[in-house]
Image (cartoon, rainbow, N blue to C red; front, side, top):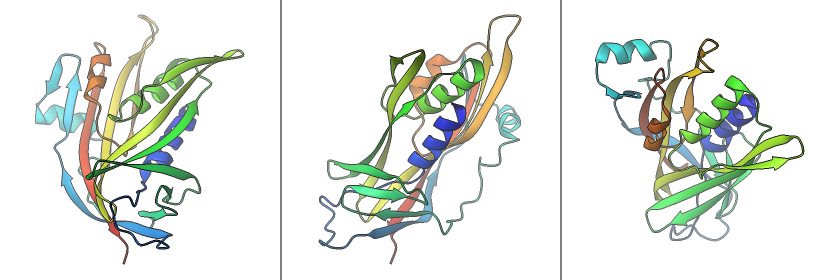
Length: 227
């Protein structure tokens, strides 16, 4: 289950799509490509425990030392391309799956990818999959349902990108999460890290236990029409 969700989130959220409503794209302009052109902004690394934010720079550096993604140099790659097949569907990077895009007002595009997560596994597997999804600010709440002999979850990965059809900001979040899993006497510390194309969900901090720590760094990459 861990691989199911992480791969799905990485592929389903990794790129994005756009609607032409209000964008002025001429009829018949599809397929259309956008590419990553610049790292527009990047925040500081934030570190939290159950007690609140930790601002000690040495503690932050020690916690993220093994994760190369934090503060990494930005270099657009050839496959950082979004191919718009129609005004409401797109292929995301090298994925053959097509995703839905809906305009939100005049200054944002929302990208949605529904899926079913499951069957839910025990221990670390279940924890990793559910927490990875819940780290994203804009993801729809997960809904649990029962299938014969299984507990499944359904949800929708959601990315909110600021901008217009021809140029917008894609959120990128690097994260590392350390969790204490299990009952006293049988507990273990498990760590998961990676990259999500979403913004950090501050409500996630309420789920931290006494031995839990989470770090993240929020960035925004500009995507523009590939001319």
